[in-house]
Image (cartoon, rainbow over all chains, first blue to last red; front, side, top):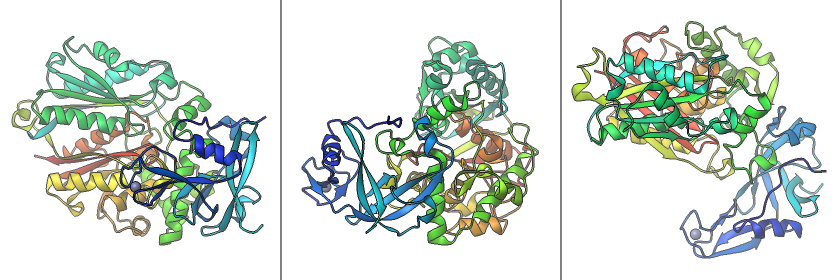
Length: 135
Length: 386
Ligand SMILES: [Zn+2]
């Protein structure tokens, strides 16, 4: 059973999580100024426009920074320590706070090429994670 | 706006305050500040109480009226709890300042309090974790040490900052805390001890992290034009700012710059007509060793990337270019989350009065910097001896 906190899709985030369920990484893009944004939200942080589209992105990017949690905050992560906390920067320029699959934490480095994988952690929820590109 | 000065300060030690409640420690700090100001408690016309999460930590909300009644403020007095995570007290102080500056009232009481050690570490951790975005950050297992560990990894990558330079912040601040009776840890540590302490969030180790604590601190503010009636050593608030940063870590343009600190520093220095080089003593938000280095750059004391070498060269020690955290900082003094910002003001006022246990010689201008959550909110206050 999945013991970690699960996202609860809402007005702003429903499309994102439904995309994950279909194993598609969807990122919001402003139809007025063209800028991408993540986390999902109603207004563009650059120009305040509500005119938004969801774009299926490549899911390719690189590690922006990372650290290893030895002491977890949430008890659901206790079995995973040490685990990596990672920020990935996508080719489209936006970043995500995420987790790494299929890689030992000690192999991580800033600039490491990664690509999205989807982890079906519960019946209703799929989480986007990343793995070393081409592996 | 009128000029505003601090005429009274009070605090508890930042420590494990066994057998004392949140209400009691807040009351102790407030009464001490009112007595220090040599006014009557009936003179207080507004009360702001900084606190982060008393609801989770001690099961008590609506604490501002509780504490106000315990202190004995008049029933007409408006009381407000202010919450901005680790920056709660900095904001409470700022709002009290604004009320006096705007001429709404003459005597304002600002305080901060947190009671953290009476619950399990798991419960305290749960409380702290709720200061970050739950859906996209906490869900991935992000922790607060993890936040600054990721800042550290990137700072090292971009600027060549070393893990030893981080460790030197801890050595310096523990050394400063030895003579501070308000500090939770009053022992020196060596660089070896820091480097060999256990990992918390790689690359940060135990001694890179501040301890949770119980504690309360308070200050009484009044218009500068009448301050000398109450004290020989009024301390004027010459700069004050409270700013907003990004909601999440991954949205920051660069994680090696904490935007609200930069913006608050700019505002506060402009208001004061001063520049970073004018500051004699500073209390910075060193929740982690990495934070003090980033703060020292974002506030303009050192160029971006030069904060690490500055520590190594001793520039931030008492007697150096700019004395940073002569109180011992959060690292040694402890971090009762909602009290910390006014705890910093307390330390700066003692310095500017020339009464500090770790006195910076001739200190005339001081700065207090308080940071909240995952870099979401900051306050900067510049204080000056008159
Ligand atoms: Zn836009």
